[in-house]
Image 1 (tube, helix red, strand yellow):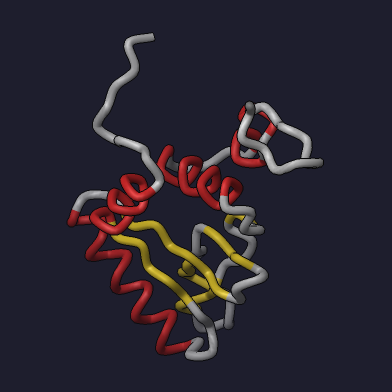
Image 2: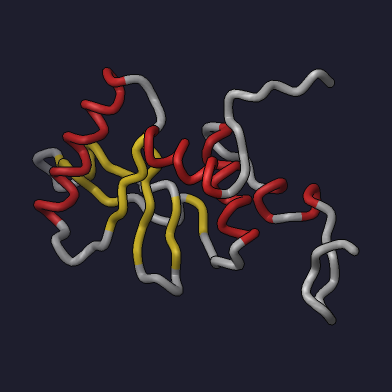
Length: 130
């Protein structure tokens, strides 16, 4: 038995959208694959929010959340990097929330991401011998 729902075609993992998109970090690919397993629609980095502008009004800095979940109406940002980078990202997130209070943004920190993997039966510390 293959575990697929009756009447649903079984797709090989290499045929998934997560396998075809060029992600900035491996954790993003894994997160996208989890979304697909749970049949959650997603878009990868579809929009950049301007956070700063020069005197002519052109954007000088911005923030591009990792995922947009259209059915949930929210963005998701994975923050699995080292603390130095997390601090800078948190500053951008605070600025985004200040400028765009209507935007729904969920932050997934490293400990939350690892817990999500564990709940889905994945061990991020296990290495393949291949």
